[in-house]
Image 1 (cartoon, rainbow, N blue to C red):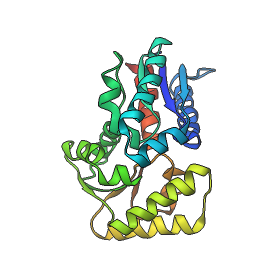
Image 2 (cartoon, rainbow, N blue to C red):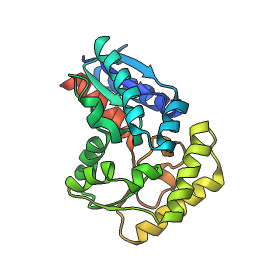
Image 3 (tube, rainbow, N blue to C red):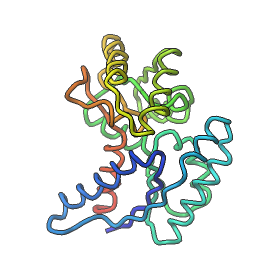
Length: 230
């Protein structure tokens, strides 16, 4: 079994999902008392969020590259960054290490292809929804990506940072997200990508009008599979 190097803490609530899911998948695949071999470096999300808000992506890349370097030195075979937004700086991190980074958008695209989804709604932080680093990764894989309007982007971003990242799950926020999803399902979206690892705390498949792709779960399952079968 390969050793997974997790960069977590962005936020720590969703990092719990990664840890639990990876170990559940290892047990399911191998049985008995098996669990995954994991190394976790949990960053201070306050520092990362300050970099995001100020546009200092270079500093955030340095923080995460340092974490990745430490995980590589400790024996990790590959890196999993437990967040969507910070995949913006994957190229800078990859330049600093020899082991691969398992990209969250690639893992998600793989599942979308299996389900034959062609048009998909992308929800996430305003950075994930408006910048090209994530959307283009999906478009290169052949998907049409729908993005909410400006007001919707701001409200979704507010809920993520002011509620979900603080562990607050509010019914009115869930209703708002579902309203947005219903609007874009009517416009032809065959599925919705929960492109922020916290959104899965709010939106569940059983209350959604289209197929739900929780990137935290998808990414974690792909990491477990890579560790066990590669």
